[in-house]
Image (cartoon, rainbow over all chains, first blue to last red; front, side):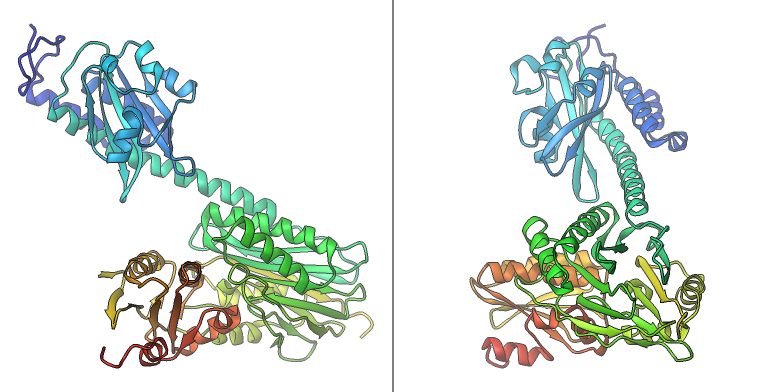
Length: 417
Length: 121
């Protein structure tokens, strides 16, 4: 009843019966079973570990996922080794059993855990004798490690490793899907909280805003409207390069920093300079366009500075809309000490101002001016909600936007014309 | 090397990345890879050229990759020189103010001349 694996060296091992071909096929089938896909991703990972353990006649199975910022593998799911997850086991890449698998991107077999370089004490206290682990790879990146263990001595075969790799590939897909879903949900929640659809009530002005995520995933576009204690009305539009959660997080930091600097300085160019300095110090990889405008309490004059942002458009009653001719400074994040000139714009009664991000006007295969001209044709000095609808209808239509779009429209009430 | 439409050649000792017609979120990773590859071929304190003469569309993702490479080159004491010609690209560089930050010319010949590479070298 005691046998050796086909490639064993003849030493006596724990009883692991030779597995007939049909059982192997069944094992592969259980791991690649399409029915697994119908489970939620978290349930899929747990079910996959159970099936892996069963198919490979192992006592334990565990998944550790790579946390890129820290360079550590974190125990995320386990079967027969739940302590790893509940105790939050972490292993640095390059060290220990799992760390070596991730660093070298290849399977590692430990026939005798007690005589090897294992970092995680749980593996020893649990009494695991032999282990094999494989890397989980997505695209060309290692995203984690899947390992199984046996409480008795066992010599894992090449077939065991292949089957385990199959399970790891399956797990990698599930994990990618969990991560993408979690990022999407978090980014959407962040966007919703930072780009509110409800805008402040400002006497003498009417406001409307729209935010449309690009290609189904949110990014780093935002608009913001707030008043200062002096009665001035401040308007911000910005666009952080990148997409998904990383861009949304940077957007949140920029929005909040700009609000803080707005309380300190009444010069839009100075506010952008401080924002730029802060970003280059704390987020040196970040790149963004930002337009910041301070509108007088009487709503008749706007002072605006732009860090590489497309110019706003203005529609006066009875006249075609035009782009506001402003002198830009460079984007946030490209050069230290950059200056952004102050532009002063008169706002006649009834005039409508349109602030937006490039997703609204930029189309592949045409210069951005064509999109801007289209925007001007769609814009009229009407109620901001109607103007938003007209602009979105003319520039976006039924086509899903590739890039994020943020649109903010403000009208100075026509009373007193 | 070719990746997502980007090629890297070395002309007279200067690495030159050639960009395709569209540089956007779809192939920005390809541009990053090409720029990293070219930076590896760059002489210490030397120049790196990104030839976007053919490029008709460049979105923020493309700009992001170029800015990162520009900063890397500058930190290393070298420089990144851009070739831009398409009206749409020139306009985007003007709006974003990148035209005042990243040195640029309108043809590869001009770029090589400015760096001091002999014609045909």
